[in-house]
Length: 250
Image 1: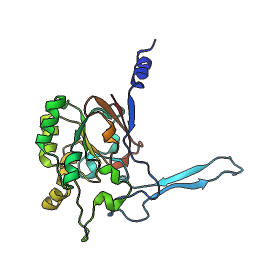
Image 2: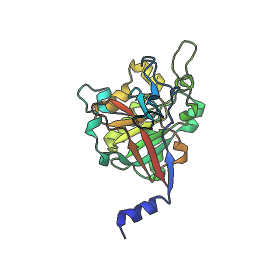
Image 3: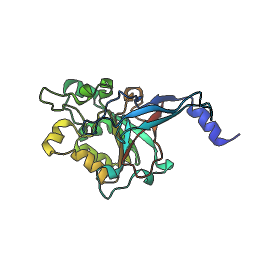
Image 4: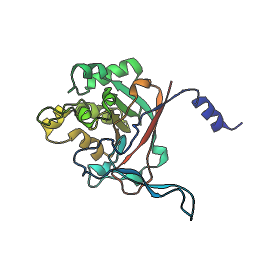
């Protein structure tokens, strides 16, 4: 019998979890992207055509649309883009840091190094090359852009996220390969306001790492022991692309 085929049979005995949001023409995107940038499933060749009876559609979307992967070139002028990543670099051990209870009490919560140390006490060290996902349950606010941004009356955002110290720990101490989160941005909003920049996102991408934003269903994945796969259209030169992301979990 063939070893990989048997391995796939064994893998199918685990739970497979969709981690990406579905997209349509009403899905939200960052306010800085011009209106009219999204046009999905436009029919350009319809049924009944005498040349060939089939349906062909076109798609227009920003790279940072829905659940998406960001490449270093998104924030780093010298950073690599989508073509730099082969398929062997897009499957990872998955670690899920759960701070959803803290976010329920404080929407500005930024994950701390202590949160990660507490995780490691329970589940063991984050392995080298891991994808570290931050669970906040913020994805339950999809598909409302207002709810995802949690705007106040003056238009200010109020969201949880990463702290610089936590990111430095997973990358510089634990040598993670990528990070992910359910929010629309990497940085907790209060930290972004203090920095006057998306400093956490800039740190990740300027250090040659990748991240996935707007994940979902992290509450259905084991905190440790799962594997995550990230896929995206093979478009050269992209700074970001919508991604299909899934986990295989105990």
